[in-house]
Length: 266
Ligand code: NI
Image 1 (cartoon, rainbow, N blue to C red):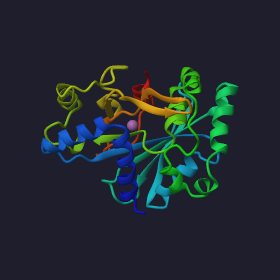
Image 2 (spheres, rainbow, N blue to C red):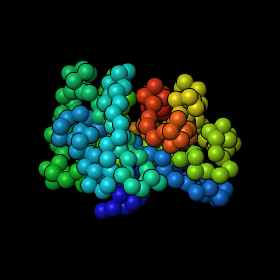
Image 3 (cartoon, helix red, strand yellow):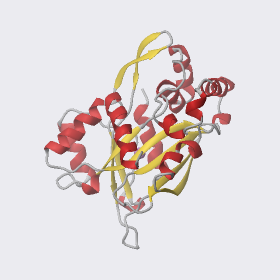
Image 4 (cartoon, rainbow, N blue to C red):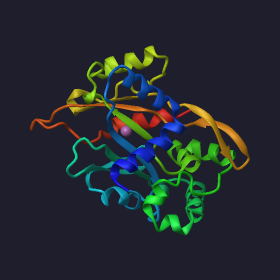
């Protein structure tokens, strides 16, 4: 599978779970914009069976290379970002993993339990794992709520599993809505709610990256004990600025990402 096919498949699943992303994508396309992805974000646990090294494999096998390493002390995450070695228009891939050992015994035991239940053929094939959605039986809503109090990230992961947590519109590639101010207004004028945690625009031109995002939608999700309404995913928007060497900054800013992660808070 080529990297283009990987992104198509991730978009299919993500935009089905998050119809607002598809609607906003269509609104921009109808306004004459060429919508390009800046990056795709993937979440996992730091267990060596499913960690960043495992989930990055399908990308590394398709021309991607590791470019940045990040630490999120508040959310207790490690992350890496990957770029395609020659196709500069290919989306970056941002993969984070939860440092489970820094959480309660319950969270540690439950995350191990779900990973223990992943079928062997998926654990032996990172590409299948990447597209497996939730490769373990549904957890109870009670457990989801309990884990949510400790880590929204862990609760989301238990409920949804693998696939894209979010896609991100490359604002630099837009013609009419080429600043976050203009794009945010366009999106809000169409009735969508933006994440206001830390202000609508996270980051500044000085840190070379500005981002905003929609608030995650809610939808009914199947739990072990029936359906419950939970938050899904958000759609992100990124504007990049040039470094002193004249090239656009391609990294990520941890303090901004901390705020963006809150787009899936209740
Ligand atoms: Ni992002």
